[in-house]
Image (cartoon, rainbow, N blue to C red; front, side, top):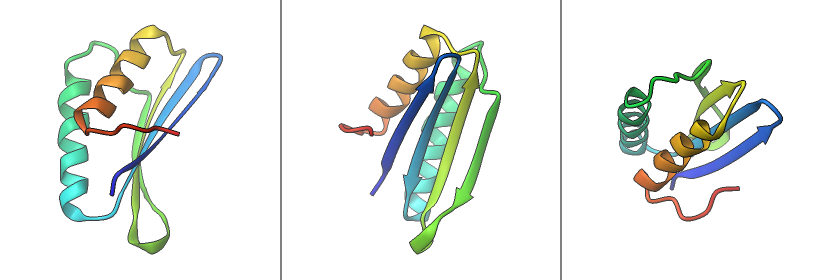
Length: 86
């Protein structure tokens, strides 16, 4: 199951996407890569980290964020058919 978490502060935004399986990892990576490629603004950081129970988390961070970043994150979430983001 894919889970997401969004965090935003004054000039910073981060979307974390957690997944369990290799299939989910490939799906997430494919969607994120294709959506980010459509925009001129690229993330300052994008990385993957392992968490408990074999899960991994893909983290996308933008600094000096603006409205466009929200549009990018929203498009990623919708493309993955996520209906709830904490």
